[in-house]
Length: 75
Image (cartoon, rainbow, N blue to C red):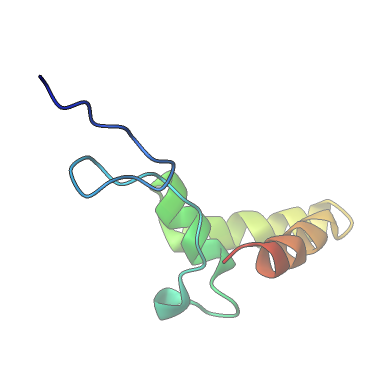
């Protein structure tokens, strides 16, 4: 009989880990939201910070609300 490995949502020790959004408090400036998003998307944290600052200024604070929601809901 052969063994069948099942992939769990969080990944398994035998396979690659699942991709999950987490706050990156080690590289955080405020709460780690931008650093966590940068890790998730594979970009630089400063680029994410710039996107959030510009989005907050140009989007009438919409990105600030998104930032706060991510901070509260993630991790």
